[in-house]
Amino acid sequence: MTHSVSLVTGLILFAPIAVTADDAKKKTPPARKPNPAMAKVEDAPGLPRVLLIGDSISIGYTVPVRELLAGKANVHRPLTNCGPTTKGVAEIRKWLGDGKWDVIHFNFGLHDLKYMGPKGQNLADPNADGSHQQVPPDEYEANLRKLVAVLKTTDAKLIWRSTTPVPAGCKGRVVGDSMKYNAIAKRIMDENRITIDDQYSFAISRLKKIQRPANVHFSPDGSRALAKQAVAAISKSLTQ
Image (cartoon, rainbow, N blue to C red; front, side, top):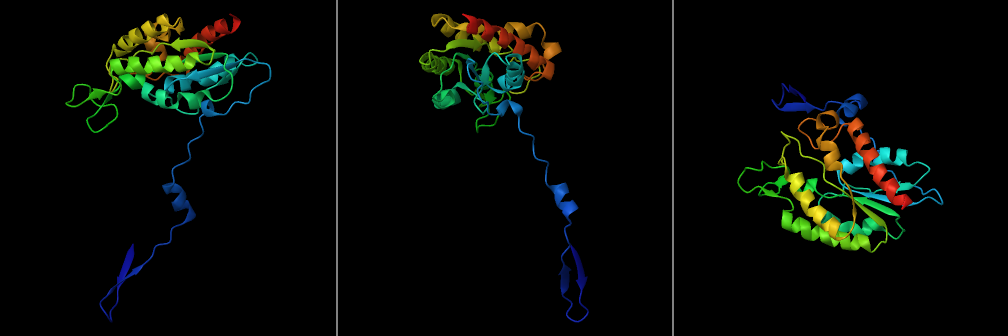
């Protein structure tokens, strides 16, 4: 802000600086493009309906799954990151809606096993005082059982997608915890005779090729590879 001194009064007089349209544009961040995975799907008549439930890993493979199943199935997902099992228990009925589902492909895990700080800080250091997993294993099991019970009422063919690996150097998570949570999930799925799309085993042998370094998320090519795995499981269920 500019200013000048009056010789008569000795007061500092402030003159406003005009803000141009170009200046305003520089200060306003560009709007983020909408994620195509979150686009609403208009059903093609006569095709089976598939629902994908999961966190950002599933968001990453939603579009390629739709592309691979184009003309064969209507592929939907909740218009959100489905997060941990606690969110799932709270919102599952809303996600299912009133329509009929032929196949539901679902996962919860990476948000459950991540560490939070004592004041709710996200992705906290697992070794820091007060850090805790967002949903510890015993609560994860209880929540997943509730979710399976609700999903079974749909009469859809259910496919559990195993939780993908936590790589070395990843913030807020511990290598090997995916295996622990997957063991819990497998026990529940086996008890309920639910098909398992084992994307953990698929990914673990090729992490350097398909996963981002020190990050649970996958490259675009990696997400397409996971999509092919999902489509194989979904296609098999649609023909049974």
